[in-house]
Each structure stands twice: as C-alpha cells, then as structure tokens.
Figure 1 (cartoon, rainbow, N blue to C red):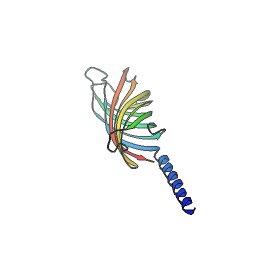
Figure 2: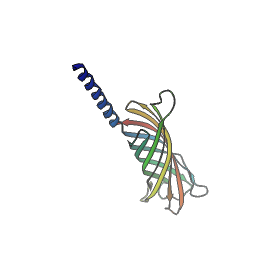
Figure 3: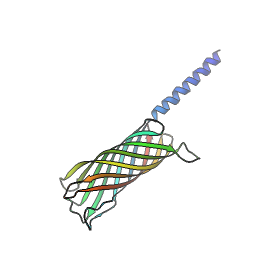
Figure 4: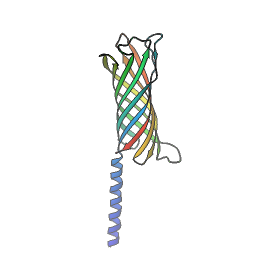
Length: 188
C-alpha cells in the first residue's frame, strides 16, 4: 500500500514538473543582428546602400504551433542620390505585433529544428540622421525563419519584408525593406 502511494506521488510530482516546464517555455525572449536593405529607390539615380539591423522580441506560445510575438527592430540605411535632410542616412525603428505559425521539420532531431512563418502589423518611425526630421507611419511585415533549440537556449535565422508608406521629404511611395537577421533565443 505504501509503495502504491509512493509511486502515485512520484507520477503526480513528475506530471506537475512537466507542466511547470511547459509553462516556463511558453515565453521566449529573442535578440538578433543582421542586415537591412531598402528595395524601392525614391528617385532615378538614387541608390539605397545595404545597412545593418538589430532587434529584440518577446513571444508567447498560445499552442505548440501558434505564437504571438512583439518585435522591436532598429535598422539604418544610407541613400545616395536622394534628397533626404541631414546626412542622407535614415534610422528606421519598427514596432510590430506578429502572429507566428511554426512546425517541427526533419526526421532527425525534429523536436529541435523548427520552421516558422510570421505576419503582423505595427508602426515604423523614420528619422533622418543629422536633422530634426522624423515621422511615424503605419506598417506591416511578413517573413519566415528557422530555429534550432538547445534546451532553453536556441539559435534562429529569419528574413522579413517590412512594408510602409514613405510620405515625407517630398516623396510619396510605398516602401519595402528586407531585413535578414540571425540571433539567439531564451525560453523563459
């Protein structure tokens, strides 16, 4: 009888511990570094130069395949041949709320290797470096990525297309920025 209670207690304790581990890993914190490239040129002869980007995000897994992620990303690009105030360099800060749909891939280590797609809405703040000129506009993004889990830590690579309307400094164009980043994640 005592053995049964002991075994039942171990089963309940291990079940509670597994539930606690699942709860801890519902939240994921991420940080990335990479490159940013503006696709559209504003004027004939204008040319965007490849820039850099850095970002951070926090995701909550609603189910094993669906998450809600808040992203903040900073990117900087130079524009040569365009009429932008200041140094001709634009700082771009994006704030996005994304839905993330993911799934395990590959027969070996399937629980570790994950592919995902994301899409979201938010805002983009543009600042012309070296001037007082800045504006914020509505934006959206869509992207894809892969992640590899190493327990609580993970590695991630993703690409996103950030879309917004550029209606300042004498321009009125839809703008698309491609952002490629690699980084680390931490299950909380």
